[in-house]
Image 1 (cartoon, rainbow, N blue to C red):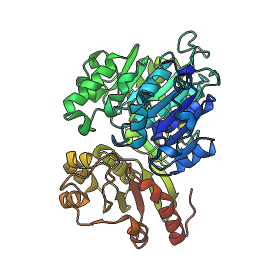
Image 2 (cartoon, rainbow, N blue to C red; image 1 turned 120 degrees about the vertical axis):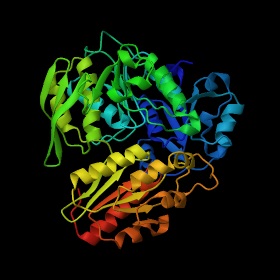
Image 3 (tube, rainbow, N blue to C red; image 1 turned 135 degrees about the horizontal axis):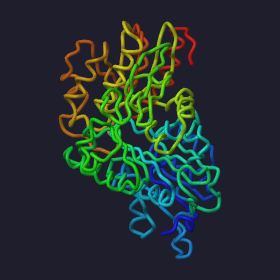
Image 4 (cartoon, rainbow, N blue to C red; image 1 turned 90 degrees about the vertical axis):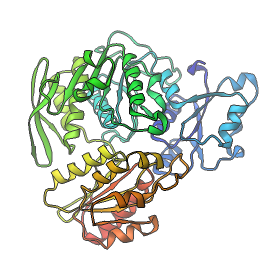
Length: 484
């Protein structure tokens, strides 16, 4: 199947962050794009405003006839793209499957798009969205005009899709002229997703692996099989593999990789003389070609300093100057729902974060403690997936015990059916903290509003993001504070 011959693309799960980037890509290319998602969100609202038709009911009658044509000449121009989050009994998916339409997973399509571009792929259990977004920002600052498919909405550009000016609207064939340092080259930055082994569709020139903490055990069963998939991904890298120093032994080809660390001085790239001034990190980065001084990053958390070092390593491999890298770090504003300030005043700080893995929770909570010493940290956490909650319940409890106050919401099931005995009460019972409750969605704003807050965190990857605006509005009114 040749993508440039496809005229109609239908997305099942179009509101997902990765799916929406692909939908925007094809829509910009002048293709006819439409799709289904389970619930309306701000993102689906934006897609609709960009001219993409979306419905929210699993109903064949709501699909435009252009996407259902059985005429051979038209059918060959139709592509159905789906996410593994779509259930197997989905009527629309089954219709397209039973009638032999061109059906591809999101990852397969992304692999096809990047096939002939100079691709930089960023993988890892966590850190990949910030790292890939920062790499894309550095490339933009270096006038290398990249495209980027990202797993979050960048604050600098307000989108999860960046498109090179060199891309032709009417042609999906990418022309790669010269090496990566050539401004006429087609460079693409992608977030390489390990879920369902999706990243194995990618063959990047440069790849970064930020972490291999156990996750998605509903797919892998055991961490060793997940690490095997990361090793396979690493074996597909054409030029340079960049690894966090501490995971070198977890990846089969790790010993030949370029390494980075926030503190390990045996890595090829590492930070030194780190200090915090005016809520920003200032540090130096030791590189194989010398020490980069006076680096600064406005993002909180040592984990983000480490993410920046990975991005610096990728930039150095692409011969981007120290001056450009320094300026890019200084101007990088981060990614929405990654330590995303909603309210920042002397009276109250409210931060929203996508953290949904025990290590991500620990990093976010510790960052808040580091930035606001002596302040009470209240966290609202919505667990994501029954299987993840079951597999990491002890680790979740330990991370949540770092909070001064914890408000637990019920588990967001996403694609899963309930698992007997797995619920938020199970998690609550494992926590040692005495300041903890379970709160239902309908009571959340009221519950939070009656508390005396210093620093509030909303945490999770489910639909907790739909409570951000209501909480922000209620707290702004209550505390009479000026929001960012």
